Length: 363
Image 1: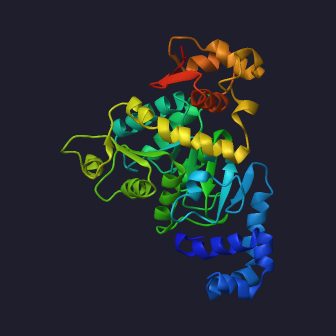
Image 2 (image 1 turned 90 degrees about the horizontal axis):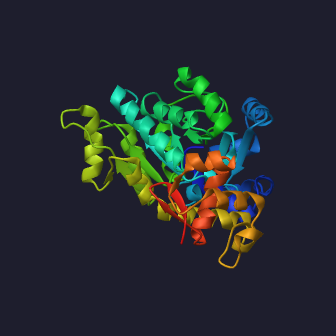
Image 3 (image 1 turned 90 degrees about the vertical axis):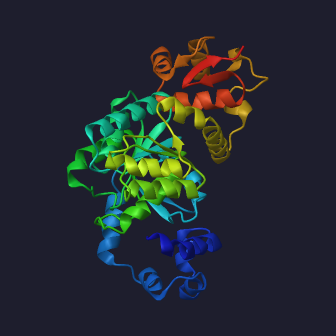
């Protein structure tokens, strides 16, 4: 499922509407869609062992396949220049619709770099966002771990192997925890081993799924710079942390800043910049669910007394003073995931204000 071969497959799906119909269309339709001889041969006679392994993996609880033709395919990913034809998901597929921020950087990160990644990850999750990264050592692992440590924190790992494998192998326990509290995502078939060529492909998915990419530590030739530039190509926000002029792992960040990335020193710098993109994602989610404002979220003509019990509980938990997400979780007993969706709808309808990740009723 390499990036360069996806366009013909998407074209085939678009023309025929479903994988079954595309498969039934036959060799001539496959050729007309642009599939090469090798691809047509695999459609005609797929490798039996590979197919059996994939079907066995998909038969297990918590394992999913999201195809290009399905409404649950992530909207942000669909908008990038080379979206995969399908995603294997170990965990919760709805995590891919969360407002994600990719935190990336060096595998050989310093202690300070890992601390910075954890600090930003905790703050972003506390503000109702979710954190994405690549399940690598260093910055990636620190960002995932910090998100998982937060109450109801959500994190997504995009990997360069099949969804059943972990690279590096010592992150296997982390893989399992992410699948239980978020999602591990791959465009590669189960059983696919790590290869150097897979990681730039992995990075494009990570960048496209996220509202923004934050680079914490990176050398001048770091893969994190590839992710950042792919994020910019997708029209996403890119941020970088500055560092010492003598630190080699600051040079990549400084290069990004010279190229136009936002220089950030505090999580609030990221959170404030994402109010608009998060609102746009909320509109996309509403469209997917075919919801109207009057049906599920408070509207300008809907008094609080007529809201659903959960919305009434949240309304009572809010006041004129800005309240952080942690307090709202404690006051309502609702999860961060539920509150994030509800608060976004209430903000869009003008019921609440959001400043620096804190929520209050509008006067």
